[in-house]
Length: 355
Image: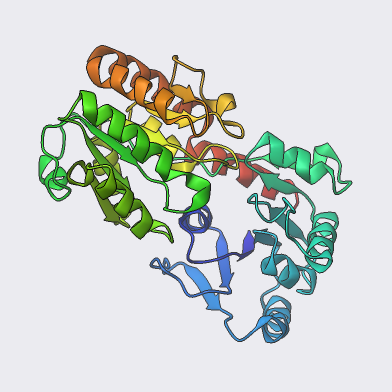
């Protein structure tokens, strides 16, 4: 099968998805409108169109006519949808990511582009039930919509028998209880709530340490907040971490926290932490309650309620057996419902049904 993907090459989600099908022996063409931030596999025919959307459409039409792919798969229904509409492709599949179909500040033109590409697509995928409901507002049938999770490599993200002390030392941690967050420093991820909760936790358990992985426009503001609260020595801002180090860093931590105000399906970092068998404590926003059975395979707290979050963290820090129990149930949930290979196999079957 020859598949042409229209997707951003600066996204780890795109890389995981596209690499899977290249590794399965399919002929894979990848066209991105942005420069790659990850290495592109040698068995992928890769193109970057960075000369503006009109010239990119012209180049894509020529390329599609030349290569004649069986399927053109669009990831994220923005400019890639526009490319797909005018590509001349005979078989189009689309994947919605969330912000591309939830219109709060979208123009009439953007809405029309999304509407037209959805109608032209043979089928559409998304990774959350509320996104399926949003897609149905475009008058496409429910039978045309398939929920495919991006999935987690549950072999790569697995329980660690021993903490990687040398890695933790880079973040001023050794044998202390470690709470980790992997959400970027933007308003939607509400890291302030975690910092205020950290202050309460540290007032009671001064040996705890917090590792905040990510970057973002609020980084300096958040760092200042930790200084103002007198906890900057206990909170480490790491910046971005090499993806190869993440399984070890997550697996060497004791508790994972996500304070996000909104997520489209389960956040990848939450699923990775669950797969590593560490307990997760996440906000009750969006569809998190569809993945987390509170106090069974994780903990939910009321969005922006730092006092409730702190109370849960203190309980977990003091109760090792509870951390282990919740961690085991969390991993089981991910293996059963969000394993990367299982999800991609579902997608593979959908592709073949089009041929």
